[in-house]
Image (tube, rainbow, N blue to C red; front, side, top):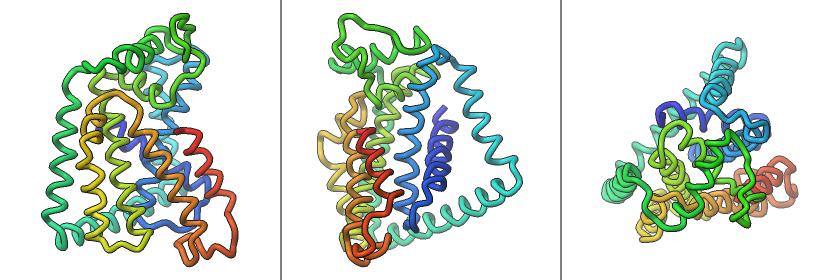
Length: 276
């Protein structure tokens, strides 16, 4: 399911950013924001499907199928999508090769640490809070095919954004698949910290060090292998800060600060803060 869901998350975010018509972004920043936006859209989609109590496997697969078929089969959209994806991947591969050439040790440490966390997500959930409500409430959402009143929960009318993704993971797989959604948020948080470091003027090697520093925090590893929500909150806030900071900095990739805030950037920042 990860092979299907990860590209689908990025595609949803990619289409959303195109619709928002953001100013030019670096390939790394675009990939990060597309992934972050895609996760938010998925959680919002699960929420909306749950309103109609239609949260079932056929419904989810139908929505994913429509999204992919509509993108790949429509003439002009298909050509634009293929060209944009090829250009983005080529730029990303070039950036990764350059990073590996200049900082192999840092790249190895970072990738190895994230891989260990990824493998750790395969274990069943055993932490207290996730079992008490993060996973339990997501499972009730799955069982009832949508929203349901939980008399014992004060948050029954305030479903947490990230828990919608856990419901999707429980529907298609298990609590392990739900964990991978939080792990992905953690990876995007590391990615975002490196993008923000570059925006602040650090060299590529130093930005990699920023990513390693973020990943080496013991709390990151602990959270990345659970179904808590903290890494998602951190990633959404970091993305919003990046967008607003880029607008405020003179000579940034979004233009100089004298141009003022651009509605699309501020709207996306506000949306991501709402997602947090």
